[in-house]
Image (cartoon, rainbow, N blue to C red; front, side, top):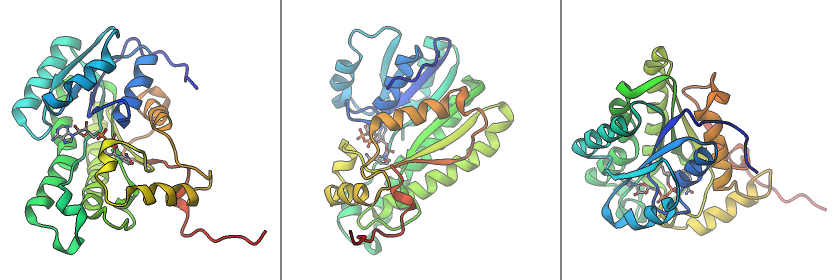
Amino acid sequence: MTVQIDLSDKTALVMGVANARSLGWAIAEQLLSAGCRVGFSYQGERLKSELDKLLTGREGVWAQQADATSEADLTALFARVKEEFGHLDYLIHSIAFAPRTAMDGRFLDTTEADWNTALNVSAYTLVSTARHAEPLLRPGASIVSLTYHASQKVVPKYNVMGVAKAALEATTRYLASEMGAAGVRVNTISAGPMRTIAARSIPGFGSMFEKAAEAAPLGRNATPDEVGKLALFLLSDLGSGVTGQTVYVDAGSSIMAMKIEQPS
Ligand code: NAD
């Protein structure tokens, strides 16, 4: 289903598209179909060809390499945003990473280095990108990131990434509180499990995916397309009164304490 909304006078930066399955791409597709001009950043040259494939033949799009943990890359990226658009309406942060060693073992054994990497890439970069974006954001601008329910409840093996997502959600509230005066809204989308590259690095993701679908009131998992539609709502004027929130799109699975088979 396509949502009818005209964003042809809006500009967006989407950070974190690795391929067509990326949640960042699902959000970009909604923005592009609404006529928004969209710039993209990708982590490293290895990912450039995938993004190039997605952008071929589209007008008004551009892409630049930027590691979100590099101040120099962020400075260059937002200089490009200024050069291309002059201002920015929507910032999409769709970035997370934790070293495999931090998710394979016990949470108790998390090393300081792995902790710092996970929290830096997955949470601090929301602060740093918002700060770089700030001078370009117009009143009515909106920032959206992606989180997961393991911030609130224990999901085995999600480990330090659960802590990073809790930090991201708290960061969303602090940024919203400070940026509201300038008319800027900040929200995070808590998505259910979806088959992406990042998801593949979570040990036991397959059974997590099945269990979430079984538990969900809708009897299935939410889809990337549904993440895109929620993002469109939160970014655009449709969500004009919403800020500082963690908004779920998970087919309801997070509301269930347990699933009990009912006798037929
Ligand atoms: P993905 O692998 O397609 O996207 C993750 C992106 O993060 C990649 O493009 C990667 O290059 C980028 N990234 C990692 N480190 C970076 C760095 N230092 N600098 C710049 N970019 C960096 O996977 P995805 O599932 O689309 O992940 C996007 C977001 O959605 C993440 O925040 C993830 O935690 C969140 N999320 C995913 C799920 C899921 O089940 N897939 C569920 C809830 C939330």
